[in-house]
Image 1 (cartoon, rainbow, N blue to C red):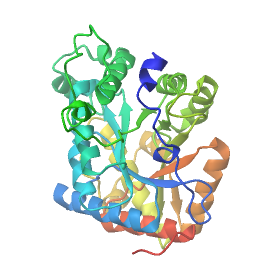
Image 2 (cartoon, rainbow, N blue to C red; image 1 turned 180 degrees about the horizontal axis):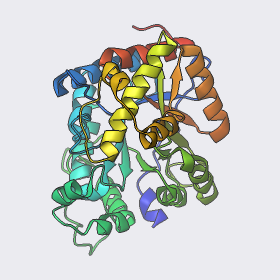
Image 3 (cartoon, rainbow, N blue to C red; image 1 turned 45 degrees about the horizontal axis):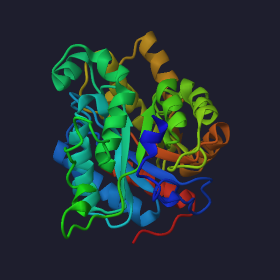
Amino acid sequence: MAADQTRGEAARTPDEIRGEARGTAPVPLSVLDLVTVGAGYTAGDALRTSVALARLAEARGFHRYWVAEHHSMPGVASSSPAVILAHLAAHTDRIRLGSGGVMLPNHAPLVIAEQFGTLEAMAPGRIDLGLGRAPGTDGATAAALRRTDRLNEGADDFPQQLAELTRFLDDDFPDGHPYRRIHAVPGPVQATSPGGVQSPHRPPIWLLGSSGFSARLAGLLGLPFAFAHHFSAQNTIPALDLYRESFKPSAVLDEPYALIGVAALATDDEREARRQVRAAALNMIRLRTGRPGLVPTPEEAEAYQFNELERDFVDSWNANVVHGTPDEVRAGLDDLHKRTGADELMITANAHGGEVRLRSYELIADAYGFGASA
């Protein structure tokens, strides 16, 4: 299967995957946008913040900007990554854009190949296709998405779905395959039509995970790997070790390349950072107890009476959120890089309001000496 996965990718250039560290940052820094919606704001407000944040990230030198698929969560307006990425592509010029990720079991591989082929046509050489195997929601919503209640089948079939998606992206099903005459358009088939010209780029595939399954699969296939440290910190180092130990060089990569998602929030005042992450933790408590809603205000979180179990959760959750002044956040990110050896840090800033999130990325860029905003 590894040969199937890498067929057609010999032209992949390293800089489509590997980033360049800027300023004094130890590795490239990138952005993970959950398109969070705070109490008192609309989804439209959140999406306008995403446009502003993508433009800021591009101007300040962040390497890539990903959005993640979630469903049935009032406080997360990223149910349609491909739609959001098309909008962001129209408002940016250089920064890499991608999914972090699209949940492959929720979709037919052909549909994903068509969506990301379209994105590649809109923003040639700038699109990443990050894939996950979790539903990105609760079981009932996943059943509605997939039109079946046999949810384990999608996760168990992930390697086969991945191979099929790759074949569609490369348009190279073998003779005799039932899909041999089916083509993802936009895609390579257009170059074989009379007078056809097709872009040499196709989105590089990343595997995403919060445990060992995708880490091992990414290693065996020689693909880049993204780990969700921001909500599975206890598994980060074991998963990265497994990825590196399993890695086999491919036409995509000659050595492992792993990024980790990191929850980080910098504010001008340390107290404000604590207030914001407390509100984000309350939002997570509600989500995990079946009461998803909009991200509460810091004032609501300050007035909330946490019980003992909830206080323990807040302490545990916020221990993995790098937050505070810009110098404190820089030190925390540097320490995390040293502990994990990650090749790239992808920062997600969870806060009630968009202006706080925008300010956080500005402060982090300043702390590392990135270039000034354009």
